[in-house]
Image 1: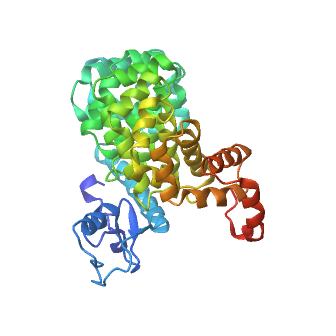
Image 2 (image 1 turned 45 degrees about the horizontal axis):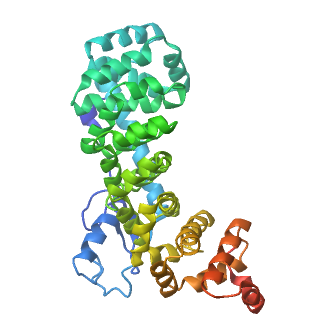
Image 3 (image 1 turned 135 degrees about the horizontal axis):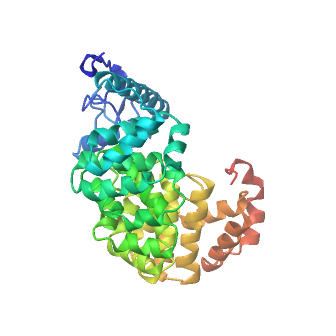
Length: 403
């Protein structure tokens, strides 16, 4: 079977009613109709107040993620990818090489053979046993590194290199040779020009390289790299890429100089947008707050948070809403800016955002001892004695979310 002969039927309900493309992030309006997040957000941002499919006037412009449909689309996409992969192998008469043939293919990488690299990728993708074989092969990783240095700006070559490294990531125990190769430049090119899947793979690879302070600084000092990572947080991006980028930024953000660079790269405004979005996944909310908590530990980060009332109120709104982890990160940020450093503007923003009520509810819940102590500290700053408040609310605690 040739690849051109592969007939792919897309179920109609996988298509966005606006763009007619397969939905990447399906969300449902109050009318019950599901759209791709990017398309419906663009429709609403244009000033429309109706459901595009039914033309009903919307009682609410908020939408909720359609998890079941997203799971079905992912299962279907994986199935299509497998079929395309099988068709590609058949079309190119690609038979998985033997171990001896793989050794020959690795030697051909010295000649920048795209065909050899593609066959090695197919071999590695096939099984864990194959990846173990490649990891044990003398000179394999060095050959891949050399290939990467010579790939220059050919995006197809670069994406294949990152694919093989992503497949082999768990087998690479020593990351230093990767840092000394052209890896950071390769990742930068993919973030600028690669497909969404290759961008996710490159960000995961980058996170795996951040093993110590020296490597984190080296990543931060690579011109343009932090900026591209921050751009990957845009709400228009694939949610998988947003989450991977947040994880990567969290892993490299501990050194003080890296925090300063992240703040200069306008990371905090991007986090504010993510936290202000009503329909972000709990995992993205958790990671956004964790990164913001890390940035709040330096003066520049705190100052930017202090002066942003909308951001502070968005943080307050995440208390007792997304998850226990998100609540803990949110409370820690509020505790840092309001209790430790006692900024008046921050206090006013938290109070106006109904923060005191949230903290009162939180202190009654099954939160951790650390969160309970920070909540009590915050109530002191607000001029509220937590013990009387607790006793007066005891009869109402049965409906509080357990954290």
